[in-house]
Image 1 (cartoon, rainbow, N blue to C red):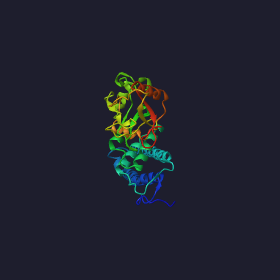
Image 2 (cartoon, one colour; image 1 turned 30 degrees about the vertical axis):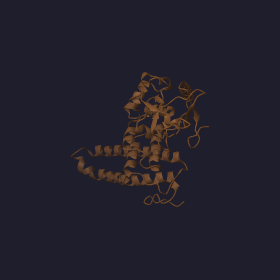
Image 3 (cartoon, rainbow, N blue to C red; image 1 turned 90 degrees about the vertical axis):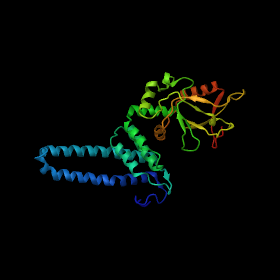
Image 4 (cartoon, rainbow, N blue to C red; image 1 turned 90 degrees about the horizontal axis):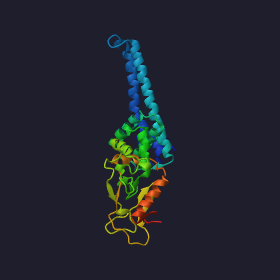
Length: 309
């Protein structure tokens, strides 16, 4: 493939990894020029300002420290970009995919410059790739929340994502993402055995990832099959698989609404959950099945179109 011209992207179907490189390069260009200019200014003004502000030796030390900090930031940014490229592999984007907002990319790259932990770099890289794949998928608020995350928060949020049930009317649309508290109250540590104690949930809430009302409910009537009157039927996703609810046994079917409680993600949490790989938690899934059975329901894997297998 010929070298891509970042001023003409997207003009054809290209590998997403190529576009990530081109977009980040175009964003970096003015920044690199500014860095070179600043270095020259420091060198040129050293003698003139030495007598008025500080000694020449102090200025040289300041310049070295500034350059070291810039190099560290650049290294972190490069590592995040590399992880974004590695994560998408040979995925392609369409010729009609618009370029992302340059300001959003700058904010992501700026924040990435202060992230040295590998796991967090993966999250930043996937977020960057997601924004370039689907411009507008990452809000400025989400970026500001991402900047506050440390490794401890990232691990806790990954756990939340692995336990969550996602209501998905259409592909890539999430209207609700919550961890069902299995008949208990999450605010009273009902989810503590699964790593989501009240303290952990409060921390996630303080970081803008989870709504503070840990015992809010959602009607799962739309996830019932066969379709119920007045509902548009669609599956929910859990641990990477799609499920629908069905009557359990030969008894009369329960009547909606099916109010299931549990802590839910904020909009920012939903955005970030898209770059988190769910980890299977068989113990929770077994308990989830038991909980539904107590409600005279069962879950079955959904086929394309919302039917069940």
